Length: 359
View 1 (cartoon, rainbow, N blue to C red):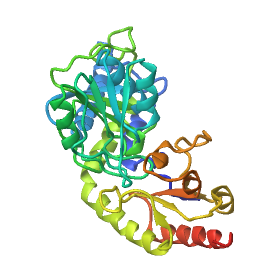
View 2: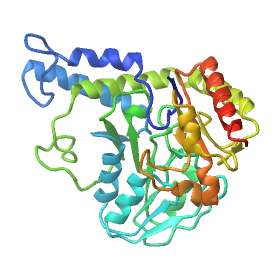
View 3: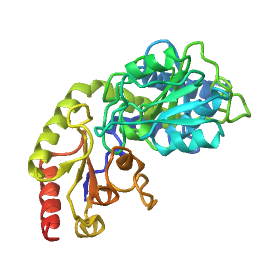
């Protein structure tokens, strides 16, 4: 299997796996204690959680705190529901975790339009009285990098808070400048599944969404997993250490893939983009047949915003693609552990399978 679906999830980093193993302890071993207990074993576990929190916080701006959650979806729910009632503005290409949660609050929701490139205009108008503006750092479907600093300024000028879904950008790009709230997911930066974080600007108070024992500053009750926290922290540290080499590697892979699939059309911006995301289309392509013919290559159908959901991509619709264009799109995602050889092999086979359809 050649894995080219890095936007869906990333392989677990060896550093993260090594950090997690000591916390998979059994009877007669250390490492299974509750980090909220006050005995020595509990304090050891709490120290591991504290170290992980520092490593994750290092991916975010200075002057805030990190609240561990079960993932980015919970982090976004905590942010959107926790800021209190009021109108919400979000880009038309936000993840469903933002759009569906915003709608579920019952608050008025304004969708900020995007250009063909997938960008929200930096000078977009935010209606006065808006409580929260949500724009993601890097789009998960088309890889567009948003001008988040300018958008945060626009939100603040309107008296609103700014929430940034940094799931696809954390560990790859600089922290979103000017954000009040930032959501991160461990498994999108080579950490374990089942843990994420919400960074909260210093001085900003949120209403808790999970109550009980008062853990995580009272915002997210429940016993933390030292294993998951340690894996997240190690993955965050590795992302910082590998930042320059990862970017260079991905840039080279991008050039190789674009050369191999040069007759395909690119969806989204070619410049302001995370180059580990290659969303392409070919007129008349039967994507279901293509995926069946290339079943030992893991890539995504570009026309579905949620794997297996069957729903059309609201992202491709928002940037102006027709239903036919969206249905003829695929997404190839690659990163740290992708080799040139396997990427070129996959692109050649995808290209041949498309030609076999007569297009």
